[in-house]
Image (tube, rainbow, N blue to C red; front, side, top):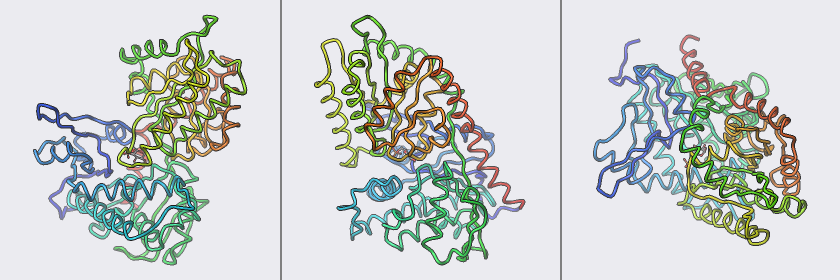
Length: 495
Ligand code: G6P
């Protein structure tokens, strides 16, 4: 097909956070840092000459400086969204409204309040989505495939379809999707914009059928323009709706792609020298029990994220020490809670609360030779891998989580086998539940019992379960996860 555009990109990815970020060094030079994650490894599977482009937002002053200086990486276009617009869209709407809705984080007697300030921020969210849609429309070759990521960019598929009806558009949600009644808290016109924005895509992807079904229910419940639904229970449902974006009867197909862990990368990375060093340092911090035996470890690794339930994890650990004094001096809770979204006061407060409760436990139970909670708040990937390798028990107890990759990564790199205590509200529960000890994340007593059971598990059983967990966790590696979605979009052309 002859291109009506000069642009050459055949495969485009759009996300708020891109694969690279910049900081201005003291000497004024720019330092580029590459990030990881499913989309990064997915894209690496495509031929470098295939004309792939990643469109992302500048997130910091360093990123904006890089744009001003014309510094960039091949295959990445960073959008110079003004800092105030980005902050209103990202902090104000994406992280304080959409994230809260999908993770059900509101204290509803007092929040949310959809007032004039919300409307002002919503306008920024629209402008920010429009900047992405326009950049994608400009860069995409005729008939190109565009893979839009996450709740930051819900309006992009609809906007882009109006600009470029020839494109094949996918959107993937990495978070849970809210239950229909919770989603209904949003003002009607906002719900409608979000759902119709998403339905501008040809394909919508979710991490589990639970989240896919929740989206389908929200779509059907709210908009009389959606005229029908075909397919089964939401796993591969087809939503048909009457709005004529560009062609009558546009259809959006919903499917589930359960992103897995990248075993090859993790196993290789987890055996590099810096990880070995961190393991030695951690062993030092953990120490040995008074009888000289090695102490058991309960590890957790999270962003300090409201949905991760770190505080209740600590409370469950305290309950364990209370109910089972035999574990005192013989176990250490190694908790890594890395800074996240620190522009938001509620995240800063949460981090302070994590620290306070950890200190309280250490004061209450600690002895001169034993620190019950070893808490680290500074991000260190090598140290996370070290903890994965030596942990006896991994605690993954989110209130609600799209998938939770830590639950999948630990079994892959664990040296001796690690028992997994897993929240039934994590997407990973649907794939790992059978070999994990599963808990209601709000039930601290149950979580304490689960920790005891996990610590008491026989080494052979632990190793067996870990093997099965690792197999389930790597069933859909990131490259396959990405290619499946890309191929499904490309197939549309021929159908
Ligand atoms: C979740 C979201 C991602 C996001 C990540 C880190 O996993 O689904 O889109 O990038 O959290 O959050 P941040 O706000 O730092 O990008």
